[in-house]
Length: 504
Image (cartoon, rainbow, N blue to C red; front, top):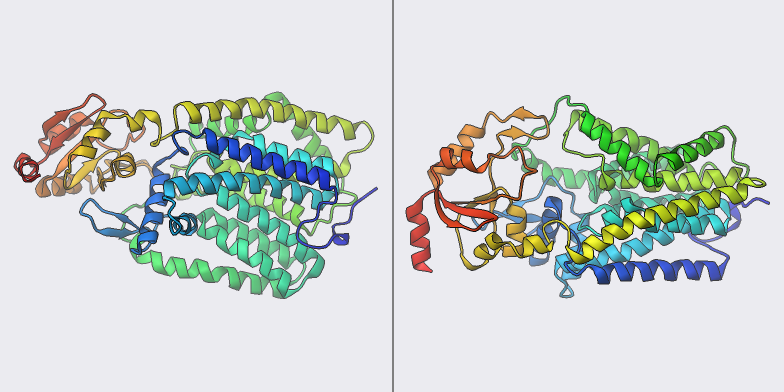
């Protein structure tokens, strides 16, 4: 017996009240537990620092900006503002953005899990499929990792799912009022992540297959915010000097990481082959009761578009994008939900019992990996907010010594933990194109001329494109003023540093 999404009213309607209540309570409970276990706070990366700095600057009224080593605000252009804006709103009620990110992303984990269940139920009418969707979302390492880091992906995934749900409403009504429900989340998606342009493009295509006029209105409405942001950011982005355009296809290491990440989605290579077989069988048959004009088609088309977009960005824009859990999380979520809808639509006889069993096995395997991640988060912390960074002797030194004009290979934890603005050391190689930076000698000469200090963290080995400690000693004629084990502080102009300490 089939289900027709047109027969339901409202954006989300789940008729099995007991099942839906259990799903919601499970999502909220798990999200709350994960938040409470994050003893060291959510994990942080270099991107996280920009989000937090942007939120603090918005809350302080200085615009979406970073504070330079000279204490002046520098507009942020390479990151969209929506996530920082959400954290700034929490700051208005007294919550620091670092703590606010933990609250927001934990809440979004519950929201995204429930939205996954609602979306699948709307497409299939199967309470079992909805429950499986929620569990595959909640336990997936790709989803759990992104929601326990200070990243914009959780908000982006929420907007992606809301767009898919809004498309099911539009499918029923085909009115301008229902179109507005799509404009709101889709328009915010590229202001959360630039890859969110894919949401706008695919949603416009989905709408256009039903009403070209509505698609044109949708495109114009969602473009307003994007254009305004680009107009604001272009003058600053054009002056950053960071150019990675060129042709640099994914390396063998990147492709290997992609294979590892995708295999992890399904709990291992064996189940990956099984699911692939089921999908091939599904593609060979037309779903008997899934309306192809709703959220299901949007999820499929988004997954295909996104799967092409990321390699394109790596090959022609910047090679720094890894095929990791974070960057592939939108692909996992959209593809897994579409696969559940498709498989449910063709399941008959014994197969109707087989595929939920496979899904449960994937949930168990994914839970094992996710639990290990949460264990690390709760006991050691992750990234720059980890116990290792919080107890760093070099960070503690910077907390007690005010050093002007500070240059370092790790300005991120210096800003986050020591509340000290710092400038990144110049790159001898562009990591995006892997080409030598021709401006490097001039940049080094400028630093040497202006003086200041260099703080070198020996644990930061992943920034291979920055000069190492010995090279800096030679090029800047550094004089060590503090040896701290995990790092060292050097004076470029010893006289100015000594004078500063005397004044303090």
